[in-house]
Image 1 (spheres, rainbow, N blue to C red):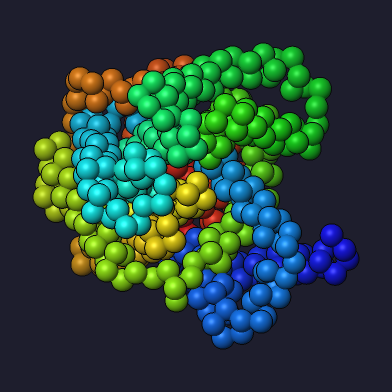
Image 2 (cartoon, rainbow, N blue to C red):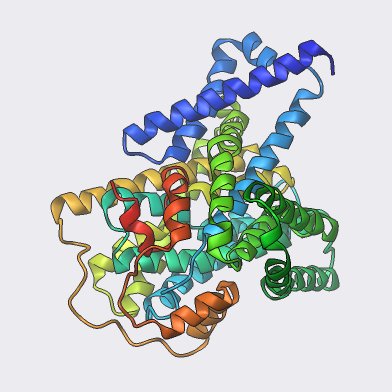
Length: 484
């Protein structure tokens, strides 16, 4: 690479970052999700706008020399990995296991039913299939079931709902749901890459992914505790930042060697970080969040928009059919599940609308499936646009509900519902305990059930930035430090 090509590459990064940050700021001023503005900035710089108006300038900026695409792709994947890593160490589960019937019901309504419908209905979108049929069915099932924690969290913060049981239940259910869906996406990409050509191969892939998850949630934290005991006092805060990033890269590299999806591995690496004591790693996580969510992640979302060619990839009938069908399924299944769990019809519908928010995870799904060759350009556009439109719809609906009835989400003066017994609650309890640190479990067992607690020192500090950019903390107890 000569000096001219190097200068052109850095200029393309500057333009992408300016477009992403500018678009995000504009959308934030309009009280719209920042992530959508960052994608819009990329769309404006891509073939949909700049490529149509000034095609030569677009080509000079983003396709000026052969290696530029590979260099930008490296930033794309690094931003995606850091997004999932940051999301992982922000996941908090306190208060989820004791939420009664509603969280297991929402997991069933938002995950099981939509996934089954998407999987079985995949042949209706066969024209958009580019790779393996089974992998395509898995992706369509995931696309129907995915829920965005960052976007919905940010909406709750903006509307002052983060302390409500409504927000706690939505975020708790979405956390469990997304962990399961990311593992399914790892299987889909493995199938697409030829690692599961038959039933035995699929079983092998599932076993490898399950072993990777179990090792991440149980073996890695034990190693982490030993490292904490022996090493933490010997390193500066700055060096701990480097070693924390090293942990993420080790997970991603190991996953790549084992043919486990690297996006899923980055999420698990973030979950492992929740097992470390906050007094040591709170500032370290903050440093990583700063550089990730204000530099690498905006470039990633801008590159997502840059890849959208709405002039040539826009299939109106496919997009409309997918959005209407997946939204109808999600609304009906979530509303029905919430109603069965004992909520009123109006509140049950609110649950359905909130769980239909696809946001960032829907865009990540589109990115991974398209890069793996599972879906074509038209379905990639459909998944991204569905993520954008459902995020808008949820924001408009919740604002409308509050405008017409300011007390609609007020806490009811009644005791919480009795916990649901059976497989659903057992699964919820297992996942909560798996990602909760030992000290957190001890505190949780000793604590009295006082509802939303005060924010921990780690959450308060970290979410000053990540709450503004990624959608706020993933637990309602962090809200007081962030509400504006």
